[in-house]
Length: 79
Image (cartoon, rainbow, N blue to C red):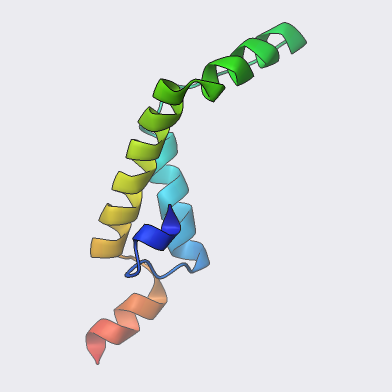
């Protein structure tokens, strides 16, 4: 998905912001057993579930690209 967002800086700060944004917006999938792990993996293989996650991650890329908080972008803004 990253290739669709050329403005994305890709530094550690921006990558972490992508993870935080996305993980705060997808439902948790806690697993405490092998059976639960298998069921979760099967559910994540369904196109609809993957599409929902992809949409959230793309929104994270868009938001972070528009307003990065990393030191590199702050220096570029100062000129």
